[in-house]
Length: 287
Image 1 (cartoon, rainbow, N blue to C red):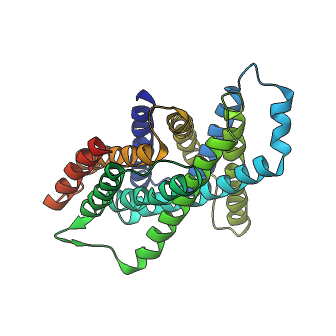
Image 2: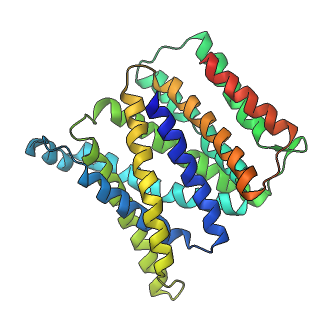
Image 3: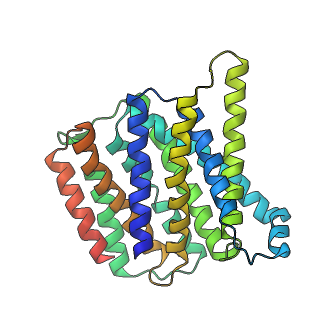
C-alpha cells in the first residue's frame, strides 16, 4: 500500500507545481521537456545492475520500441494539456478530467487482462465517477467555458489511452529488470518530442530559452519519475487489481489536490465538491 500512497503524493505535487508555474510565469513546454529528460536520466541511472544484454536488445523489438514511442508521445501531449488546463481552467476541473479517464484502463483490464468483475467493483467505480462529477460542480452546475471543453476532452482521452497502454505493458512487457529501461525509453522519447516543439518555436521566433524554465522542469522531473515507478509497482503488486488501483489513486489525487489548492491557491470549494470528496473516499472502501 505504500506504493499507492507515494504515487498519490508525488502526482499531486506535480499538479500543484503546474499551478505554481502560472504564478511565476514558467513556460510549460520548456519545463515539461526538461522534466522528461530529467526523468529519463533518473530511469537509466537506476537500471538494475543485473540487467542482461538480452534485456537491452529487447528495446529494438518492434513491440517494446512501439509502445515506449507511443506512450512517450502521449505523455508530452497530455502533460501540456494538463498544465494548460490547470492554469486556465483550474486545478479541480483539470484533475477531474484527468482522473475520469480511469474508465479507459479499467475497461481494458476487464476486456483484455481477464480481471474479475464483481458487484463491489461496479458499485465502487460508479460511486467514484459520481464523486469525480460532484467534485467538478460549482453552484450546482459545471462552470466550464465551452472553449475549454475540447481541451478537457483531449486530456481525458490522452491520459486514459496512456494509462491503458501502461497497464497492458506492465502485464506483458515489463519485469523488475527492464522496468527502468522501459521508463527511460518513454521519458526520452517524450523529451525529444518536446524538444522538437521547442526548437520549432525558437526557429519561428516564438520562444526563447530561459534558465528558470529549465530548472523548474528539472524539479518537476523528479516526482514524475517517482510517480511512474511506484504506479507501475502498484500495478505489478498482487495485493490489488488495476481496476481497484486506478480508482483509489485517482480519488486520492483529487482529495489531496483539492485540499492543497484551497490552502495554497485559495480555490473555492462548494458543498457539492465536499460531497464528491466524501463519496470518493467512501468508494475506495467499497472497492
